[in-house]
Image (cartoon, rainbow over all chains, first blue to last red; front, side):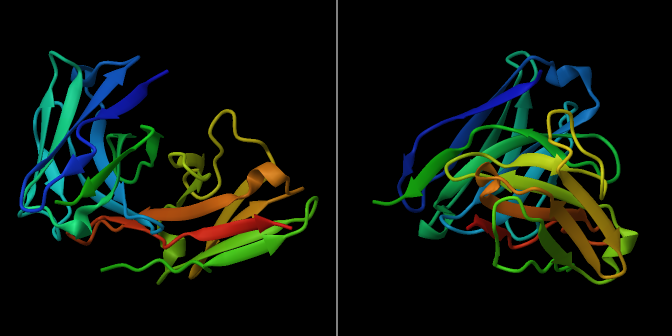
Length: 121
Length: 109
C-alpha cells in the first residue's frame, strides 16, 4: 500500500525558509488521481491544512498561508515538497504529508508519520 | 468560514459506548470524515463519508450525520481506543475548503 515519509531539517531559524520533502512509496504520483497534501499540527493543538498539489503541478493553498507557501512536485523522484518562507515561532509544528483521492470531498488517507519542525534561533 | 465544534473531552468506561459529536451549520448536508490520533502518531482515518469504515478499522467504530451534528460512535470501548479524534469536512463554497474540528480527547476510565 502507499506510504508517505516526510524529511527535512528539524530546526529552522526565524525569518528563514522551512523546506520539507515527502517521499511516496508503493504508488506513483504521476499516475494521477490523487492530490498530495501538507497538513500541520501545532504542539498540543489541532490540525491545520496547508495546501495540496496535483501531479500536473496545479496547487491549492490555505489562504491564511498562501503568501508564504510553495508546494512543488518532482515526479521523477516520486516526491513532493513544501516551502514556507519567513518563518516565526508560530510555525513550530509537526508537519504531515497526506494523500487524498481526487474528487469533491475525499478524506486524507494515508498520512506520513510527521516531522517536528522547531523555529528557533 | 465554516466552523466545526467538538467537545474537548469525552470519558467512558471500558466496554461502554463512546459518542463524540461534531457540530456545524447544516453539517448533515456535508460529508464528514473522522480521524483517530494516538499520542506521538499520525492521524488515521477511521470513518469516511459519514459512516463508511476503511479496511482494518473494527466494526465497533461507526458514524452518523444529520442536521447540525455528526457523531462518531465507538462501541465496546477498549483501552486502546484512547486517543484524540478529529472530524473533517470540505466546505466547497469557501476559499478555505478543508475544515477540521478542534479535536476530542477520548479517555478510557
